[in-house]
Image (cartoon, rainbow, N blue to C red; front, side, top):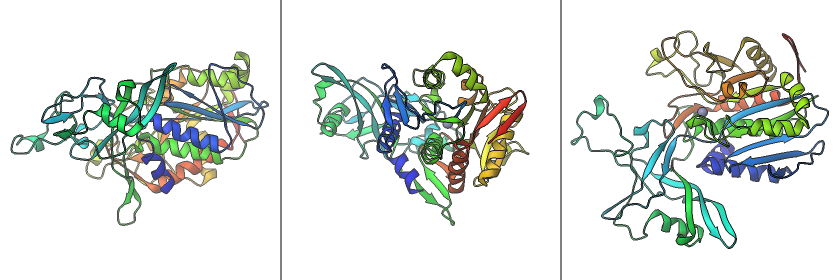
Length: 424
Ligand SMILES: [Zn+2]
């Protein structure tokens, strides 16, 4: 688990997650490609490209390949985004923020928080985007004392314009966030023109429980999946006739319709360039396979009635295959059967998830990618509790199982003809 924990600690924002992946790929000998340049792809070599600083796609070239084996995960997590306006000084220095995604708001109260992201800095010939992580206990969001809010345990509606504004100082001497960033980066605060900064939870990922089997960590959704997919991608042996593709998108938590989100041209643009032509791309996609890897809801021990009675995954019970008749999840009978076969080969258990029939559920990447090209797609994830809390709970065996199953996936080739799928 140490490697997963190190990755999560080093990835407080989607920008950092992508930079960490970028550095690891470079260390493994992969070549960085830029979308604005011509691509010369050589057989047997590994490549990657980054879009918008917060999404990345990596692949290993095989010009004879007939298909792509793709995993898709997401680099972002719900958080508070820092506004560009300066903090109001006074006795209390508070940081103006707005919500990013649908977090459990109360979970962000009364814990150490910090700020990370990227700043757009003035340079001699223009602008440079630089990563920054303050990496100290910079902020907290104090609860309102129970004496002022006696009904809080009967349910309280948190207002992000009022209740979750982080407190940075009571008598600031170091000045505003801009000057803290200037201190940290060595950039003059007047040269920081704009930024994409987020508040993040400082909790250190750890194992808890009598068996030390439970993972308690921020951003498990979806960095656990990014980590498993990336490890499987880089450690897998070549398959007979497919190109392994690792895709990690940004902005899943706000609908994916952004330049680096799954609902963009990023994946199709890259696949078409690998295929060499639109015609080749069209021929390859039906025999390809997309695994959308995003965490799933486990049965909650204190609220089992919220889960479907027959399909309630448990922590440690194996990889969750997500089903939904209204197609919020892309899974169908054939794509699920293919994946179950691969998991059998990998010796990994699977579980099924349905929303309780009278409750709406979430959505994820699979259904979005399904509208872009004709590739069988499956939505899967590790089971977790407290999804979108500042700190979530998962099981170590599920992370290990996911990595193993995805490795088998990358080492497999499929050929699809009508309703028949050959798995090699
Ligand atoms: Zn997710």
